[in-house]
Amino acid sequence: MSYTHSVVADGTSKNVTDFYVCKRQCTSIVPTNTDYWDKLSDMGPIYTDVLVAMKAYIKELTAEEVIITDNENIVAGMTSGNSDKVSSQGNVRIWAGTNDKNASNIADAPFTVTDKGVLTCRGNDGNIVLKDGTIYFIVGGVQYKLGITNGKPDWINSAGADSVEQWYTKIETEHNVSFNAIDSFSIKDNIYYTNGTMSTMVNGTYYKRASKMTCLYNISEGIIFTFKNTFGIDIYTKATFSNGIKTVEGAVAISGYATTTSTPT
Image (cartoon, rainbow, N blue to C red):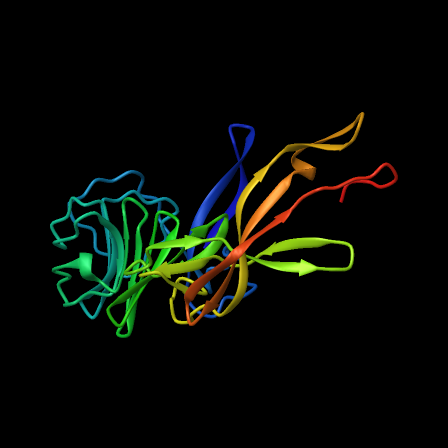
C-alpha cells in the first residue's frame, strides 16, 4: 500500500509517499509498524531487458502488449498489432479466450475488439457482433441485426428483408379521426412481416401515409381558408393483410372543413 506523510527537509515541509507490503494480517495497522509492514526500497528509474516479479503494483503502465496466462496458456490480452508473442491478430486489439494455448489466431478468439471498435462475441449457439451502431446476431446460420428504422430500434433480417415500410392504425371517435404509427413492417418477396425477424406475417387492416400537403378551401363567396401543414390533407392507403399478403382497398383522405360558425377539424 502507499502511505503519504509529511517530512521536513532544510526547514521546508513536504509530502512524501512511501510504499509498504503487508507481512501478516494488517487491517487498521499503520504502515510504520514494522511488525506488520515492510517498507519497499526506492530504486529510482531503471532500464532492464527482462523483469521478473511475483507481484506488482503499477500506477501507470505503457506497453505494446499485455498477455494474460493461465498455467502458461495464453487466455486473453491486449496488443498493439506489433507482436512476437501472438499471431494472426489482424486488427484485433483486445481479446479473451483462444483456440489454442499459444494464441496462434486471436482474430478468431471468442471475444475480440478491433482497432475500429468492432466487438465480436462467439459462442456455441451463435455469434454477436457490434459494428457501426448495429448489433448483429448470427444464429443457426441466419444473420439478424438490430438497427434503427425511422428513428426507432428495429429488427431486420439482413439475410433476406428487401425493405421496411411504416404503417399506421386508424383511431376514430365521434368527432375525430387520427392515425397512430406502429412498428415498421419488413417485406420479403412481397410478403409483409411484423418485424425484421420475419417470423410473424402481418394480418389485419392498416394504413400507409401516401402524401401530406397544404390546400386552399373556398368555403363560400368571400370566405377562403388557407390550410397550412397543421390543417392540410393527409392521404392514407388502406390495405388488409392476410398471412402477409397485402390487398389494397382504396385510400382515406383526412382534410379540414369549416363553416361560418365552426373551426377547422
